[in-house]
Length: 415
Length: 167
Image 1 (cartoon, rainbow over the protein chains, first blue to last red):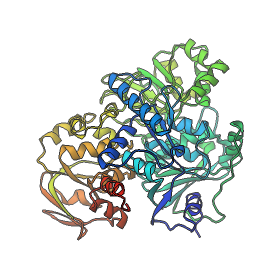
Image 2 (cartoon, chains in turn orange, yellow):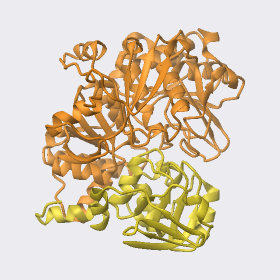
Image 3 (cartoon, each protein chain N blue to C red):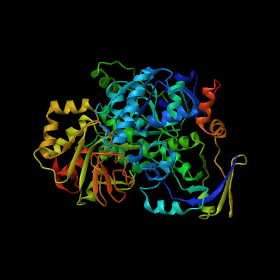
Image 4 (cartoon, rainbow over the protein chains, first blue to last red):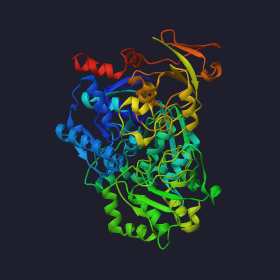
């Protein structure tokens, strides 16, 4: 009797209790791909002589989000191919500008608690925030899942992350994610599923949880699952959708555990070249910054820009500042609330619905030796442009504080 | 299954961004991808361009960190990498590698027994990696994973699927 969330979800699929370490072949509820990974999946199927028509087109979604709208002729051609394939096969397509896949999967309620989802993108783990067993795969695995409706996975060991307390002012779930990355390490959760428990959950909204689940892959995790609780149900209710509660069984057995008191956290920054190199932002104050990026599947949601606006209201940015809300829905919410006006008045450049800056594809690449503070998830060499540029990862508060002052700054001094 | 080549040593946490930059995501031709290998890590790039082929990458912990881009194992394979032996792998890269018939084996302690450039052999049936200073045991590979590899990768299994046979 193990009873972790991962096992509860898999047990329903298999009709029996899964064993840790076994290779299970499971039916998937949904498969999604994007303009960066679908073309390769189609190439694989074509080379294998397998028709690319999904077994159930209703369980497949495709996004044009990685460089959108097309910044180059090569991208435009790929996008055209993606559109044509989706139309021909009756697959739902979210075209350029609609939003980043992981964000849309949640806010359009495609992902729901208890689902098994594979996405051809490593940040598919984001959907664990709503109680889905969601994991990233490559194009070939996604292609196979698409045409057979199934995938194989090794039933993972589980790392319990127990949360207590509440986040102090100026400190966010991004700071929790960066702290966790420094605790677990860059490969500390390889093959494992992370599951979040404890009284601290009540204070973390779905958007906050998405940030944490999102970054679990930077620790190697296969999935990072939150229970479906009152917070989850309230979120889906706001979308007009009823979802079930989902909790681990009483006495669930975990393979490893970490415990974090949210009340003791403070603004964090991860130094290049790895997300796990997190330290308090105050220790890095004064580092000069050329560009700030507010966005990505990690921190491109409405709550993130409200935080940035709290800092930037009435101030002028002293760096280049690029704000890319993760979806049109987020953008429209911010427009209605006046947040876009605040960001624009402060001097930010605003777009929406692309992964561009985070992956160095378009919309603000970094030149040699430039320094960026980014709310995204990876600070590897060359990630946002030149291999010699330096990327510091931080929360929207901390990133906005760097934009307002031109140097790394503990945001609490500006709140 | 036996694979031999010349050792090319790398450290910990080699990411898929290191192997192939995100700006090349729209390329699907393996040969073209191979021409952009390790551009984000210029020192590794110049070293691997001079390396003797076929190459067996011998790396530390967490090889294949980060993005799910399958372009990474495709680029390595097209460049002349026959296998990767590492202390550990990030799981998406590991799957992608096996799916494309690029041998990936976990062998904790491997960096300590291999010299740069020396011949090295992976013998999957005996479960060992052999180099001049000795041999090291490979971590167990699940039977299902081995069957994918022996079929020549998941692509081959897909081909069987197309032929109406069970994958």
